[in-house]
Image (cartoon, rainbow, N blue to C red; front, side, top):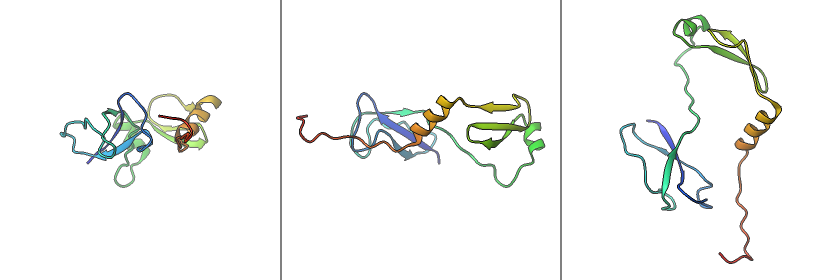
Length: 115
């Protein structure tokens, strides 16, 4: 079953740290409310990962229309097989943005401020 991510529809949530992941069937309707805090939520597009069962030779993946890349170093991927560019690389700003997105975000709560 896939994992879907949801985030508050129009405001931040300090209880859920911005997004929650929910295991749902493909044919299930999207959630309308967060199962933890009850706020209105919307389903968001999140990164998808998959792993092929067993090992697949690069040339076999290429014959099926896939391009295979291998990480050469941080931010640089080199093509192993298939069509497409020989190298994919991110700019320094791209790499920093990805690192910042992966870093855990902790909300700041001002206890002296009235809500």
